Amino acid sequence: MKRRDFLKTAMATGAAGSASVLAAPALANATLNLKLVGSFPKGFPGVGTSAEQLGKRIEALSDGKISIKYFGGGELVPPFETFSAVSSGTADIGHNAPYYQVGKIRSTMYFTTLPFGLDATELSGWLRHGGGQALWDEAYAPHGVKPFYAGSSGAQAGGWFKKPIKSLDDLVGLKMRIAGLGGDILRKVGATTVVTPPPEIYPALQSGVVDAAEFVGPWNDLALGLYKIAPYYHLPAFHEPGPGLEMIVNQNTYENLRPWLKEVLAQAATAQAEESTAEFRYNNTIALSTLVERGAILSSFPPDVIEAIGAAAREVIAAYPAGDAMSEKIHGSYMGYVKACSLYGARMEGQLYQDRAQVWST
Image (tube, rainbow, N blue to C red; front, side):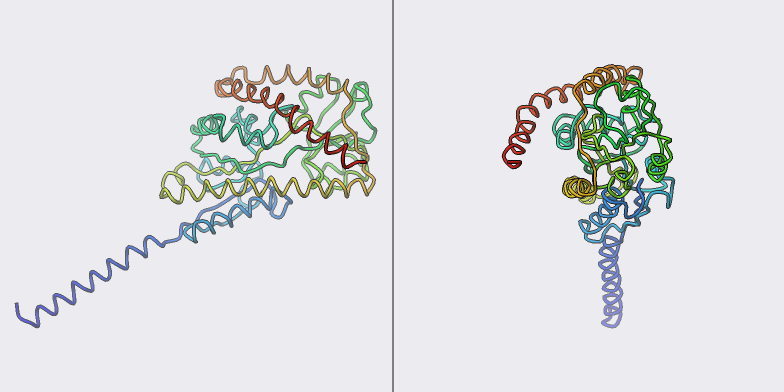
């Protein structure tokens, strides 16, 4: 080969080599653009803000390999269609409360909350160490969705009442805004229940459409101003002791990610779960003191009410899984842990809180 031809060949080979070397990093560094939809409005304390934080956390942990476009509730799809959007591929990731899709997946109640069920810490424990996550994966698999635990609002409030609940008789004929299994239970003891979206709760109380209403807890309740109309604040909620939130990922999107990016999603959900639960606990604590300063009158449900709604809850929950294979499979695992937690909680946290209150109230 002549020197001139050799140089031409070497230069061509080098150029091709350089192109191939450049092409691989360029491909590896390509940004994956994903859509995240939430069920709550942008900026809504605790749940709307948590979805936005989740998106930013995924971007940061992926070192920019994933870019998130976040849509609040109602922006890309209706607020309660988050699960359907992720299942269909309209969105890649969702932030949601599992029981919003209870109409199509009955077992989602177990991954959110049951009356007199698991609190936030207990739910996380069951999911991570008690087999709950595997059951959750199984429940969602037919819908092409991968679930991750994303935190909790903590124990919710029992509700705002225009008159205090002093005995079971005060619930008979009472009209209350309350959703889900809590409503089923109250109807068994003589109350009338309705469901209204959050913006309509205040007008419903003000106009007399309802006599009482529950929403979330002190942090969110303070924003609604319900104490101005119904000052008797009964705590805690029997029906939502620690409802869970979820991050859901379209299964095709998830399976096509490289292993380390799958781990990014898992770690982002874990970190957001801690952040969300801590944020709710802190802000609920501060907001409750503010509510008392503004005239809220705190009370627990009296013993005869707890006895009656407890009996009704046992009936409702025992019947709940019947006819749904996945719920029947989950029920024993969940309720077995509830009973174990009842013993532990009463002897540990329950007594600890009583002792602490005794020390610092003097």
